[in-house]
Structures are given as structure tokens and as C-alpha cells.
Length: 360
Image (cartoon, rainbow, N blue to C red; front, top):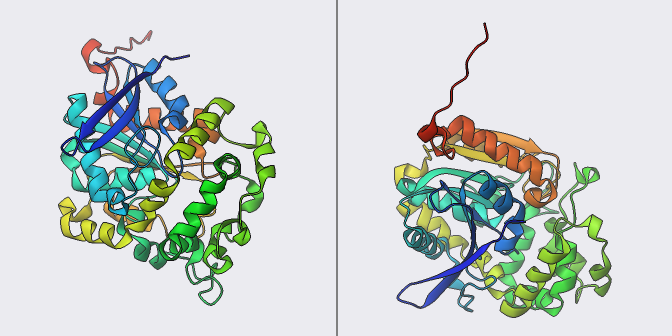
């Protein structure tokens, strides 16, 4: 097993801190893996191991609001503009002008936004499950892309994004529910994807109408803590660390990422460089059994096909937690993309050369 380095940086005049795990040679090409909701750096365990073994310098931060990073109860801390300042500070600390960025879930929103606002610091960008030019433009943009044949407006006014509306209208109730039993909630949320979920409305589509997650339950079901290990996407070590993390920080910071839709939208339209077009190599990995970030029955991926001018797309048969559920497939997809689209970032390739001699 790879030994991870534990480090932290301070920024914002010493008021904020980002903790991160690192592995691989410091001289190697830099890849930064950015987690989403709710997660910590350690959820990128497979990627830390695989890419460091290949010679990359791999970094995975606890994003603001999580783990050992600053988790203040100030919603504005979790607007994309503020998150981008933290990622820029991380790059400065690492002594690098730019990196390959890989995100998942809200980590995609952070990665896509960073690439849109700091293209000069983005060698290439990849997103798992969440396509670009959607979540970073706010809930208004997500609603615009809902498939109304699938989610009739009279029954599902917010489509599969109903849970995000619930956060806006009932933030304290949502956060209190998760904080009541993180051990149960995390185990339920990290369930593996199921093929039989295809073609059905996402469970998140009725959260606002139900008055909460899981059918509007008053509190998490303690039986969720007994969901078998084989049915979830993370191992017991990572599960334990994630639960301890959420117990320590509360879900406030995690949920507050959903509290800045209007500010994020304004940030994109006011400040995104190149009119929001991403000209660097980009990769999108879709999770076929993800009914929320569903690109197969909706136009959710259409904006990125317009704005990403060097786009590679792939699809993996997995649920939302695609990097944890199918790590080998995700890693091999990223590796192939780097080799084909960003070959100058392959460790040692250009310094040592590579020659094939034909026997003919």
C-alpha cells in the first residue's frame, strides 16, 4: 500500500486551511483529485495509489467544509469563487503553475469552474458524473436541462434537482437530518449503482415535496449502518474516516456548497475567461446508473459539447460513485486520455524517449 503524505496550507491571510494527501515523486506531473458531496481526500484512495505508482505527483485535498480543512459555518465560504481561490493557493503552495484536475460530483463543479476562470493554470480537466457548464451555472441552469417528458413539471417541478431546492428552502432541517446519524447516512448514500434504476425517476426528484430526504424521514434509519460492505462503494477504513470527519465538521459546510447558486451563476457570466469555452483537453466520464446526473435521458451533457472544444467522453456501467465502484475502469480511462490527449504529461515519456523497432 502506498504511504500518503499529510500536509496542509494556510491562505486568506491565515484565516483558512486546506489539508491534503499526497503521493508519488514530487518531480512527477501533477494531478489534483477533487472530491464532492459528501467525501474526503481519502475517498480517492485508488487513484492516489494507481497514479503515484505510475510516476505522477498526486494530490487530493479535503475540500473546504470537509475533513481537516477549514469548515466555518459561513455559507459564502463555499461559493465557487472562494473555492477557486483555495485551489489557486494550493497550486502556489505546491510550486506549480498548472495541473491536471479531476473532479467528482461537486468536485466537478469546482474543477470546471477553476478551468473556466483559471485556464492558464489548467493543463487538462476531467469530470466524473457531472458534466461541465451545468452545476457551476447554478440551479437555474440545471432546471433548464431537465427532461420534462421524464419529469413532468406538475409532478416534478424541480426535476431530479428537487433536493437542491430543499437545501435552499430548508437548509437547517436538511443539515440536522444528516448530522443526526452520519454513520447511517454515509452508508446509505454510498450504495452501489443498480441497472434496474435505469429509466426511473431519481429518488432525489421528490425531496422538496416530501419535506426531506428518504421520503421525508424524520431521522436516519439506524439499520442503514448494517448495510453489508459488499453493497457500498468504499472500504471500511475509508467509511470510518469519512464518518468521523462528518461527525467532527457537521454537514453544514458540505450542504452549504448548494447555497450559492445565484452567486456562482453571476461569477460564471461575469468572470469566466474565453466566454466560458474550455480549449484545453477535457474528459467526461458518465456513470450509466446515475439517475441524477443522467446524460442518457436528458440534454445534460449538451452544454459541454458546445463549450469544451477538445472533449473526450466515456461511459462506465456504475452508479454515481463511479470512481469508487469501478476504480480500475475509471483509472484506465483517465490513463488512456492522458496518453492520447496530454502525452507531454506522461511521466518520463519525453525525457527518456520511446522507440519501437520493427522486426520487418
